[in-house]
Length: 262
Image (cartoon, rainbow, N blue to C red; front, top):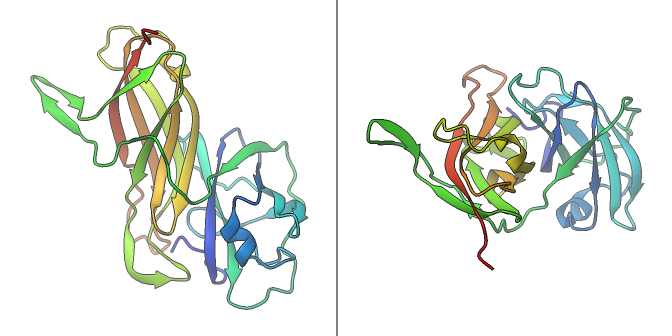
């Protein structure tokens, strides 16, 4: 079960960071995380940090102001992250069934990596839900196309369908969770163009909410007016029982950089 295996919690937020060795992610949580500040203990003792399997990892409250609704949390990098993932995912939980009296915060050493969390809410962008790879002629192509202006930034949103239990267990229904991401732009037709598609992806996040589920957010900034292939991959970890295999669902979209005419 991905939710904390140690004790019950009611709420959570996903934290993403660019993987660099074992550098610990550090995330700022401001007043926009209203569900956090309305449900957490005033001292923060009920915070838990867990990897995608629900295993607790160490965290440190670098700064904490319940009155001002602001905190900085540093989290130990989980072990065993997917080798192909470039972005790691870890989860912060809060809202215990009973008051937590012991402070779990401990020193987390290492050079921190910037972590990012997305508050629950609307996600305005190009929705890639249901996009597939389809046969076309003698080959295959993505069923969704994105026109993205050169010199601009376009947000692509790719929902990730997780296996769900029939009922909530320890706070959530998820039987598997996202533990890593990889988003990249590739040469769509082996033409050698775009010459540097790797630079077209400028940011990657994982958004999660109880109502909307999980979604990959990727900001795309084409450098040239050429055709690329956007590939968004989520690495999922199954339950500790091993009943579900680990898997990596992938979303594709054709990405055309366009030069604005005015």
